[in-house]
Length: 102
Image 1 (tube, one colour):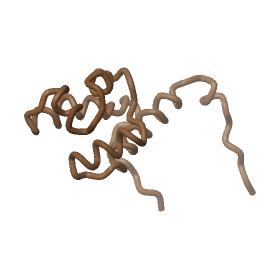
Image 2: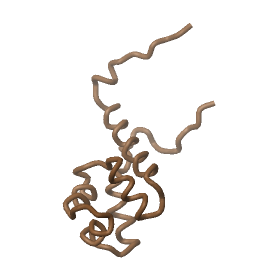
Image 3: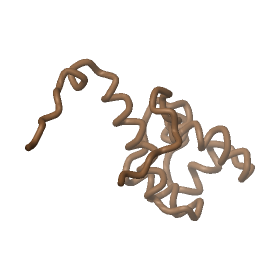
């Protein structure tokens, strides 16, 4: 039996940068620059992430997970969910038919 997600599959998943921008940074009361310094990246890297111009790489996920204490997997899963959803919207993937096995 497959586990069903409660998430609406027609809605675009939230970008991990939006979580960082809307929830995390206000909660920890840090600016993008302060947070960038804390995790050892440029302010531009954090800015591009929170403005959804870049995704979360494995390196960034490790940095976020260590700094925030929630581990890298949650950040990678959020990014992977978004990436797969965006790909699924493309016609070239919708055209692939599922094989039927006897």
